[in-house]
Length: 341
Ligand SMILES: Nc1ncnc2c1ncn2[C@@H]1O[C@H](COP(=O)(O)OP(=O)(O)OP(=O)(O)O)[C@@H](O)[C@H]1O
Image 1 (cartoon, helix red, strand yellow):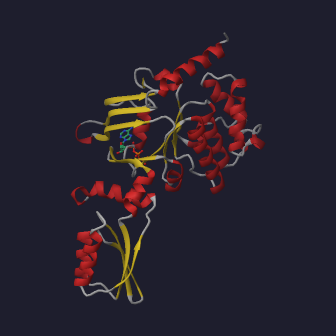
Image 2 (cartoon, rainbow, N blue to C red):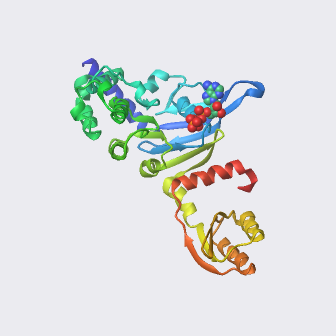
Image 3 (cartoon, rainbow, N blue to C red):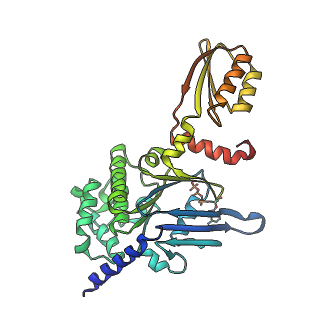
């Protein structure tokens, strides 16, 4: 048997075993930078279990611990506590075995070789993963097509536009054909069309090839579009871990935009703010508009009671569909607000 065939078999065997365990399993992950008073608990007792073929978005405000978590999953940061397993393999005890399963794009286009052509880059990264050029050629052709790079295959990366370089970088991450892929801001710098191409390809990889994708992005459209599940981190802890639809759905029925006739006095505004978290006050013409996010559907009647007691008449009430960004701000705001939550 050739070395390549044996490698393929080894990879297939590993894939079979991996099918029975989560693609990613994290328990009690903790990372503290520095010591004493200067210590920063960047990741604090994080648990995660991600099934194969899932696309998970990791969100959180700056400094929430996203990068540290992802680098710990890759074995690039040594945690102070907890375990990380990729396809059932301990990331810190067997980093080389884990490397066969993971690909990562962490620093945009900086990871590719600008003097090599697009195809040479793909071949180089596939070879790093132990694949022969011949075995990977079909995959590379498909990636070149998917990212509209086929016409540029023989050009040095240096001659490409910024967006094209970003796509090459992403294609190189996928060129090895690993079953888990980490992507940090994959659409940064891409135009709308390129971003859509990329989303299509990522969806296809997850659906057809059962690849597990973990991505961090500040582009909520991308997350909403391609992720099955969203994990929100704040101050090193997981504060939400839900299917995207559920996360948006929970807020959907409880967010309202209310319009009343005339101005609303300060005391009534304060009461609505304290009791129902009213905000986004705007006055247009003879009307006043504000938003409330309610703990449950019945609370809407309590809002209407307050309006009636203040002698205000209702002009309009509108169930307001939030997008993921609003949900994200709401969830992280609650976490920071402590007992106001
Ligand atoms: N090498 C380091 N040394 C000391 N502190 C660090 C180091 N890396 C990260 N931190 C701190 O750990 C915390 C989490 O940082 P991390 O980069 O993981 O957050 P993030 O969610 O990725 O942030 P961003 O969205 O800004 O990239 C921050 O308070 C950060 O300042």
